[in-house]
Image (cartoon, rainbow, N blue to C red; front, top):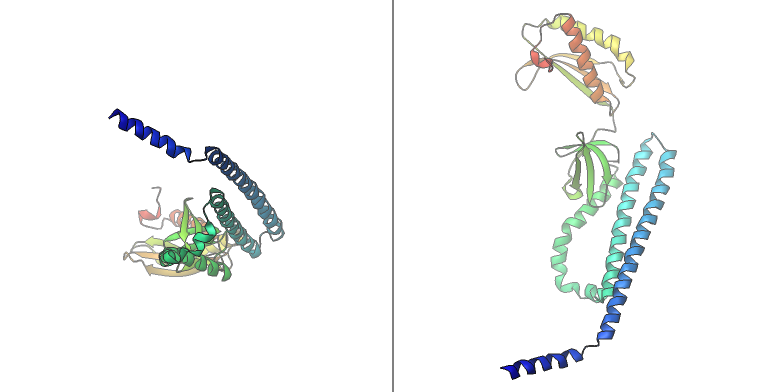
Length: 287
């Protein structure tokens, strides 16, 4: 038994003698040094590249401030950073694999066996890029615009190669894959309508209420330059719940319809309350 263990140890020693440990250690140290070098170079290039891109687009953004072109520049700024970072990551990974000794070129050339599997796996990625390209080309949405995509509504933060980023009204940052975007409702291109509905009771004096609303419109509309047309008092409408309401539509510049709606609803309710017009309690959420 002891002889067998001794022979096994001797065999292992003979086997280990075949390795050129000095050469292996030298190659290992060289590989580590090269990996550190490429990583540091990657960080430096990323910092310089991002700085140059930001500086370049900042100059042109200040030139076209408060202009539709500014949003277009912001969109291309986001896209340029996206492309730069993807390219940089690709070359860094390629460099590290080459340093380790993995024949990247040979692997790519012999990848025909796995081409079908890779193709199927990359379908989503390619669809994202193609969809993102057409979103930008057709100017469907620009950075800073208020849009609705599916059930998500908010401000466009970035349009990238793979995803479009939307910041919701509550601050939530939503990442939407471009391939899943079928319809974009852009609410920043045309004038928008602030639709105000005031629920009423069957016994509410409708004609008197409408006269008060018209008086409020005459008094308050000149104070809001965002309003592009005279308020349109539609009168009595039926809500989906079956209740009655007075509806007023106010056309305003895009992005201001929310404020117009909130302000004028408050003006209407205050005036109706001062005139002792009977209204349902849900019109006064603080009561």
